[in-house]
Length: 450
Image (cartoon, rainbow, N blue to C red; front, top):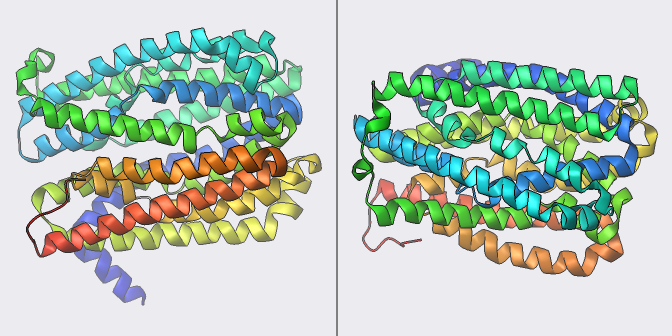
């Protein structure tokens, strides 16, 4: 068995490249887990159950506003700039990155203005206290702080510059944890906890921007910012991809990424506090696989651009095995050790009601974690509308059921609906992607435009 695994490793250069790049991010995320856990523990102790729900409302609202107009610009860079670099079309790649960065900069400013305008309503409905609006505005500074974060991250990915990302990710985890611990020890409360999270986002935002602009000069050559916009891919295709990705992201914002806001508004802050902790626990499952998400998309897009279908199928199978094994190990640990270790020792026992929704959420997020490549694959294959259709249809059902069930059954219903949404949407997109790869191996006419 071991000899077979070693032979597979030696023969699969694409997997080795993904694993090498993921290793840099995984090493920092492994250490980052420790500091993220410290930050989570002391944040819950510093603000309590309802305060943790308010913290979740503030951070989630800012993240939602940030993503609402973001166009998921990183995916645009990876597909078009990465594909252009694979074909040695440096000027086109430079034009794509420049356009993406300028678009993201403009959108980040608009998003922050949206936060400022809606902060009073957000505080009233999601934090149950209009007086908390200044906290929403303050933490909303993460949006202009990450002015070209997505574009920068994508450029660093397609150019293979992962060690610097790993260092920045670790630095922000350490700084955030230290400030949160100070907030707990000093009794500073919610305001200082927000300072901690904002500081970490500033480190990431400005750090990624500086690295990407430096790396752009190396990848595209001197004067890359003067490349004219006419070097871009055909406008209809290019901006059509951007708009469809943004619509898909908008659907996810309301269906998947805003759960804390739904819980707070429909079931109350206490339920929201427990649910946020449940989501935080599930977040630790995603950390080991997250580096593969960032490093595999460029390689998947490259394999599709080159028509290397056999290499791509082998890569998907092996990535699924790795992510599936990691997910299964986390699930076993959650079942066996959550109550005696996590809630009785690490967190305070009063947070024990968060365990049931965490176990329910594991079902859906476990599948999504295992098949993490579903969206990158379908985008690389040139079908940006398909995820939008799937998530929209399934998501509408989830929202309708949430409005009916969450006020009565609270966080348990929300967790069950979220898992069902992930299982259906991820399963359908992944199945379509696999079928497309199989079909592309043996081309047939009249392929679907979705």
